[in-house]
Image (cartoon, rainbow, N blue to C red; front, side, top):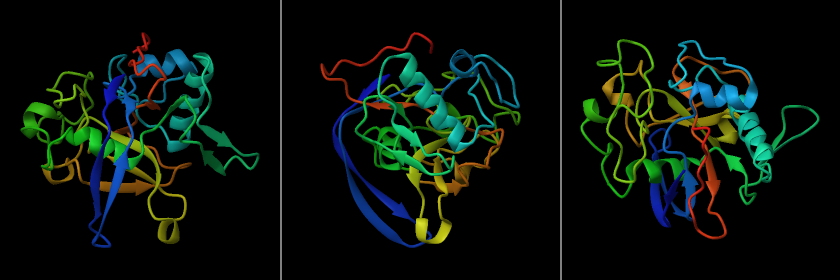
Length: 227
């Protein structure tokens, strides 16, 4: 887990042409997307279409991703960040809990840019697996160059689920995904690109997730040896 400092980020929705600024509190973000071996260690399952222990887990719904976060929190003696109601569809997100969670959209973009103001943190072929260099499959995490905060595969390889609802008035419970994947063209693999899909039904072979957590009390980064 990498310690992400306090700051702020301006987000933009090209569909509505709106901009907004979000303050970011210090938090922890995993250096890599969740790998298949890590997912199996917590869930005893591997839903991935493209198999490989060190490859990112994919073909997971948003709900499956947050169940993983809750399970990891329980295993490490921390509070669950997501409360799943009896209807199995209503989910309450407690961003103040000390357990593991998906990053918010603002946290994700802020961490991806790592202080840069551009749409990418480096030359695309050097930092990301995408349509032109991926051979149309996912790859072992951490093989491309990281951003300046030491985060790998923030762009390309697999899209990553975020905690946030995209636009409830238009899309209901649809959740945000970020980062682009191995099947995407260059124009889709940007720090600013926003997409969304259904949290309980949508899963695909270039969509995974990365875990986050709130800053620890002693401000020391948390080490997860399962990674």
